[in-house]
Length: 474
Ligand SMILES: Cc1ncc(COP(=O)(O)O)c(C=O)c1O
Image (tube, rainbow, N blue to C red; front, side):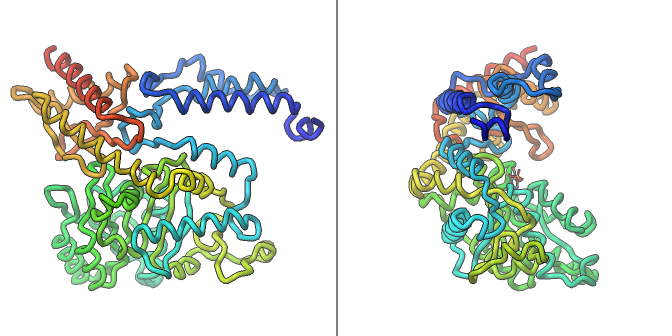
């Protein structure tokens, strides 16, 4: 009891009660089902209570209650089975448990000596993910906070491996309009300016056009620039499109360009034997981003960077100092702090490890494949509802569609779709995203929740239809 008083100002009984309260909340949350709202707006009252920090402490029980009731209960519930906007995060309760265990032990996962078990788990999972995408023996990588950091680290490698310092101002990188915005941000961070980014044309399915890429590279070389990297997407956020990886890899091979594949969203399909072939060519990527907090059912902060040749990572990320010598690697394998941007890093792998141990590779693969079937069910519902149009068919569990009946102007349809999505969200039944394709406002569903059903998809489309008709009739 004294120990608790010293470090936390609470008693062992209070601690046990808090854990029980959390266990109750975890069970309620895990079983909240489709009747719970997918979106809850906070009262300004509740929010204003959160800002204040008391001078003297208050009881753990009341502070925890405020956290659970005032802070955690509001906003978009991205783990709700009918949350379809952005990339949802249907985190498995197994991930919560793994995360909790990692949090309790709080191992420093930067060096093996500080976290031998966590390091072994992370190395094992990195190998497992490398195998899943068809990488060979020399491949490796590490867990990072998410796709943005994985893209940043991959592009650091690209810059360091393909450009001399003198060439950096002339270096050019190729992507498309559909490339995730985190790539442009990463390029800015590593000193590649907007003028060094070429946006390559896409085909009608919004995939990078390899012929256009080859032309752009040739033009840039002729103009004195130094092409150095291509960023291809294995599952764009907008439509789930996968760029033609084999053709792009051929061009990169011929031209000596680094190929970074952003598979933050779509790489998870590698675990579904039925859909694995969609990623053909991904094994030729020099570096690859893959988020476990998207379609591998993990809590946020769980992404992975893989590199086809892991021995290149220390060239960009190794650090040395006298005060780190006690954590220096003893074996043949480097510490994780030498493979990525972070020194102190949490144990991010434990949660995915626990999930895979309990569900097995096949179980996770089936859960991934379920998302593909959900989006197909939504597509059928859209196609059979008069007045609706499929803008981009179900691809990697993403469907883009739009209410556009004859007689409604494009501008009016834009407004109707936007307001219908907003009303649906405010009502709490489901959250459907909006985006723009070809300049028109569209609705977008990313359906990756393993508990969602075809009925969830049909009911969501039916409610959108009722809302859109009501709005269009005004
Ligand atoms: C394709 C893709 N790449 C990168 C990212 C960025 O990942 P994160 O938000 O984990 O940083 C996302 C996020 O949705 C994404 O969909």
